Amino acid sequence: MIEMSLKERQRLRTMSHFIDATYEIIEEEGIDNVSVRKVADIAGYNIGTLYNYFKNIDHLIGYTGVKYLKDYYAVLDDYIRDAENAEERYIKIWELFCMYSFDMPEIWKAIFFLTPRGGIRELLDGYFAIYPEDYGEHDEDLIPMLNSSSIYERSRMCLDPVAKAGIIPEECVDEINEMTVLVYRGILERFITQKGELDKKVEIEKFKRYVRIGVDACRIIK
Image (cartoon, rainbow, N blue to C red; front, side):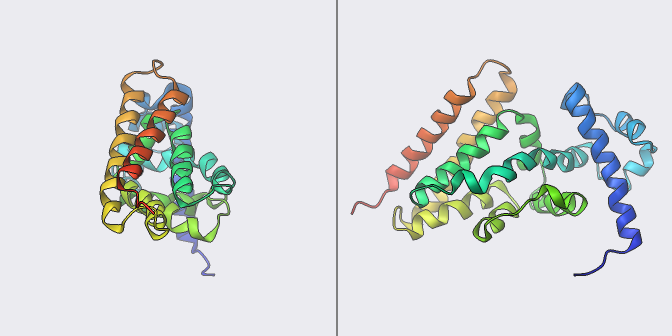
């Protein structure tokens, strides 16, 4: 194990002050009230220092958003362990993802859809370097998915075993994967624009039904 330098420890410590300040604002006032000035004031630094560590406010919010993945990570392995087959495992992974993300849709949108291409991996690596305890312990086959660099890649890694199990043909994987992510994003956006109007359980069941329709349309008849 490579020992971290003093300079690197100081860098991570300073970043944590900004992340903790942002988290405090989100929890108390909501994500729409996060501003560079407010974060800097709470963290005890000037605005210029913040920009030495984060590209902009969206970059900082993305880092902070990873903190909200902690509870999802903590229960994921147990939640999917009793899945009967690869298809059910795929659906259960997405079901749990929906359960947590629909409670904080703005945060999950910031991480998985507003982060520049490939940037999700940078957020995850950076955040868990600061808060390694939040990552938890996971089954080896889940780690590549949890560390993936985009939501499409994340979903694809869960769908590939469905094809390998002979449930759907390989040539359908990309289409089902894209459909699943687009349906998820559409429902997530509705939770943002229709605050308090949607029933989470109903929307999750709707999402699962759409995913099953996609899988059934390509299912290999045996």
